[in-house]
Image (cartoon, rainbow, N blue to C red; front, side, top):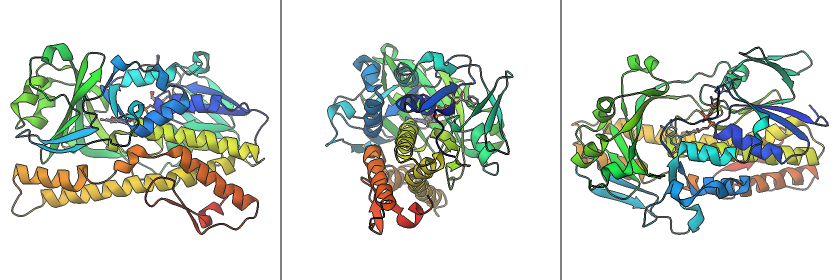
Length: 443
Ligand SMILES: Cc1cc2nc3c(=O)[nH]c(=O)nc-3n(C[C@H](O)[C@H](O)[C@H](O)COP(=O)(O)OP(=O)(O)OC[C@H]3O[C@@H](n4cnc5c(N)ncnc54)[C@H](O)[C@@H]3O)c2cc1C
């Protein structure tokens, strides 16, 4: 579809992906957009969220970094990004520094609501329709997309941005065969008032406490709050009763760190507002766009179930790529489909790499659990940390999406002008992400 004079865009969902999309699309004068959110108000549940260096860079581009006050974020005094401890003994097994990271982009923890409010401040509220739950999308023979909402509202648009999270209705419309399922793991997230635990000897750090089958994550959040998140295996039969953020008890939370250091169990006693999250994930999508008029961003495009602790960052990378791709296609007089193809070429290989890392993690986990004779608590933890948590994936947090987009656009421009291209164009940051010329030819 060529660009309409005004490209009418519906953004479904007002999480980090949807709000980020609104900010990026608002920069494009040829786009008319509206956000539809099912909740009756824009609010976040759940405890904390990590803001990685790559996420800070995007928040700066989006203009939202300035909306964070230093009292609303937590950074440890020695600027480590994360530490890993043996959950039983408390022994510090690894600590990751951030040597080359500018101070304003150092990893930080904050309340999820703080991130949401920082993004929300940059969005025109009159363009967000709350209490609008998308039920389905109908495509007319002419290709026009018609949105049907639970409250009876309808809207016809040129482009749908599916930012509706892990259980995306938009994804179900374009890829009905894609299914998410319970991963066998359940997480509990609790917030503690910092003053309540000031007398306890908990490290001033961003800490994973590990056991062979579970972990606990403790850290400050700013705003006088402290977070405890646990993750452990729970049988499938329980998965249907828990979804996103149900109330839970201290006993449910602590079951996954019963045999951990007494310090963390003491902190857990002060937990308030404990929520339970069954982890659902789905296989990697081959493509994250379809029909030349639908694009998935954020968790809708990569149901990773919180793996890597950077999903909000990934979401912002997606929407930045979308904005850059639409701008490029519009300037070149190309179609919306051309823009979406570019989004796919930039983002799909990236997600392929993330899924490959998770496959490696799963293989390590399996080999530890099937070890004969069974490994001791301490041996299993040492192997886990050495082979998964300390090894792979740190490039993700320093990913420079702006450079990646710039490189990809240069490739496209060279191709359009008929210039010879190198066989492969290397991703600006990561070791081995390539956008191949053969792929480019799909345009
Ligand atoms: C346990 C856990 C820990 C995590 N920790 C981190 C972390 O430390 N750092 C980090 O960056 N990420 C983390 N993540 C991931 C992060 O929370 C998500 O990746 C991020 O919230 C994705 O944003 P999103 O906007 O795509 O989806 P969501 O935040 O899920 O937002 C989707 C929005 O769409 C709305 N919606 C859904 N369906 C409809 C519909 N039919 N109609 C209208 N609206 C709809 C929803 O109400 C919601 O507001 C974690 C995730 C989990 C589960």
